[in-house]
Length: 277
Image (cartoon, rainbow, N blue to C red; front, side, top):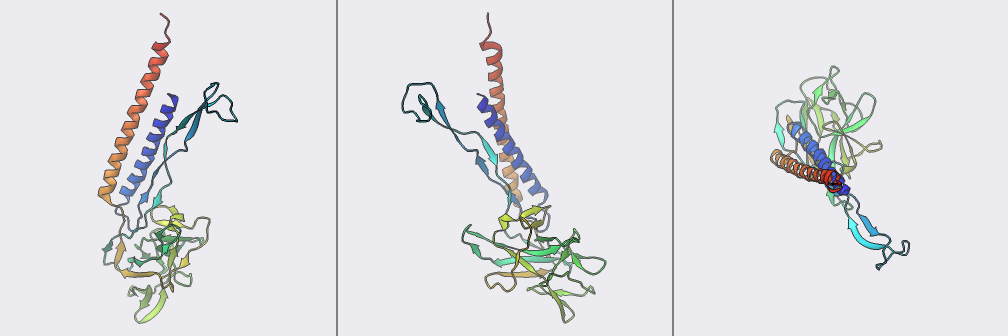
């Protein structure tokens, strides 16, 4: 009966963590470039049960007089949340520093059978590289194109993009023009296995273990375009997320009732079954 406590408790913890993940997705439904987390429930490894001190056969050679009873499951847990890198809808803002990245053709990883992902490459003041799909950029006091966190948007040479006036144009290939003069080209990074990236905050990603992603520029298998005056919206499906939240809540309640039933049974066993009259 004690195993039932742990199984029901594990189910409640898993649904609580799933609810937290879905709540975070819902809270970022309007965050530009946000990629919704998705998780899957997994069962703990099964244990093989045997009874000892019995003459019944068959028996295990290492445990003489043992009888195989069969496997028993020990509960469920929520595996790590992995972002969904599907393209979000483009939203027109009319702000010339807003730039949306739209993926059109991406290679399929033969090992995972999943498409890769592309990102803006940005850098903080310490020189650490991060990657984002949030194109809600602005200009700092020095004219550098930066994210809301103050990270520099990098060009193909790995340098910050400095713009000396408000009249600039970003073409679909990422070239930045002031008048008729090209001053930079926005670098686009490509991740062959984006699920290996580490999520930092709402829209930033880092390479697991450090390092940098390869550039998508010059790769004929990757087709993308940049749209000035647009941002990529969150890819959170609000209706589906609300439905999954209700499902997680109801499943939590079911496990709660199971746990309460076990508690009542244990109380009866302790207080009534062994009572001497």
